[in-house]
Image 1 (cartoon, rainbow, N blue to C red):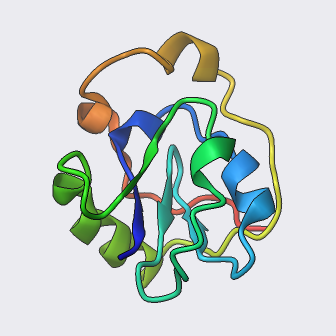
Image 2: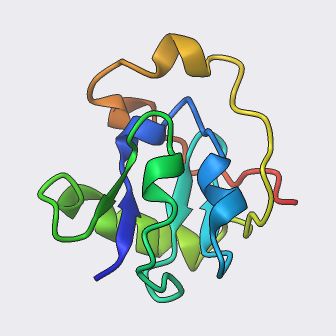
Image 3: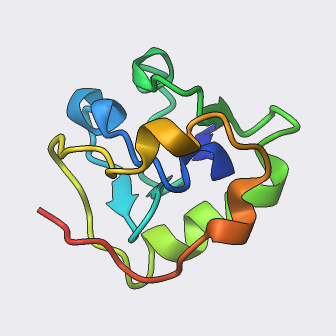
Length: 112
């Protein structure tokens, strides 16, 4: 089992989860985070830290459409993120918007 960041993270990018991750398995895109499923140790400490419930277990049905997206971008162009950074300026406005995948950006984030 691993954990997966879903599209709920898009346009928010809260990084409370990054701060508690013991193995630094989060990667940063322009407008969301992803988890590298091969680096995740399944500890689950990130789940309660996400203020918008964007992280789910890979056995949760909500994870399926995002598992490969997490794998692709965490092993490709996106930089590893190991410390908390400010959320996106539009986070509060977008936190409750459904089906945010249409806002997904494949561009890498800033890294740390």
